[in-house]
Image 1: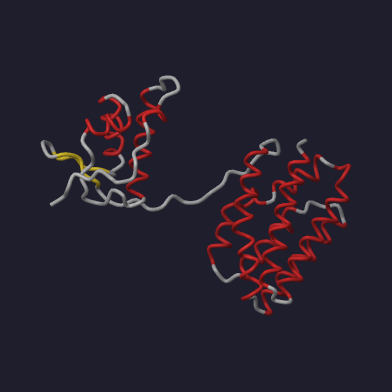
Image 2: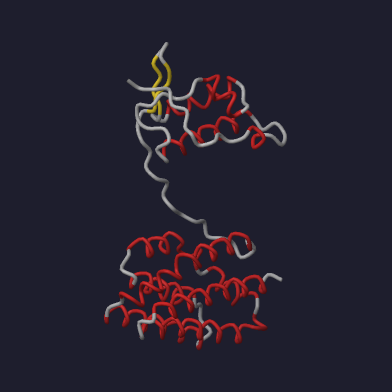
Length: 251
């Protein structure tokens, strides 16, 4: 028999909902998003009974009208089912949200830095695995991408595609498909800082271009000799310096 489940995870503090009275519709949407999150994390499972209206009102510091609005939205979306006199129940599990990142504009420093921080964690490990697992075919692919980047820089062409191709080749050489999936999800956001640098910092472009090429070359060399730690360190250094260049470009 389904139980009235109150997840052990602490509910958002009422203070998080303060700071001026938002519109009721916004509160209802926020409540929907929180309940969806609990379903997605399996804190609320298919068949579980949702907390009562009174409990939700107390947990979130909202009115009964807001709670009913939120539950109506969830019913309309097929996420919950109501049984008169019994309660409201989770209809089914939710699939994980697809990962995507909006391409930041050249002026959006915060978003660009956030993408670089994500890449620092992901790509440093991808480079280490690439050094460990790469095949001869992988190495040829990485070398080809590096050469394309070198030529693009020498010709003062747009380096975005060549840059992304190099990083994608490394991620694929890791032979763990989720690394390349993350870069595919990032898409243009992964190279927007490179485009910004070339467009807005011409006075130091040549210095930066030489640095960028050398950094990619260090990653390639480490992967070639299958030096796992050196590959990880070289990629981390490259992305750290990319973050510094992006900050300098907007100063």
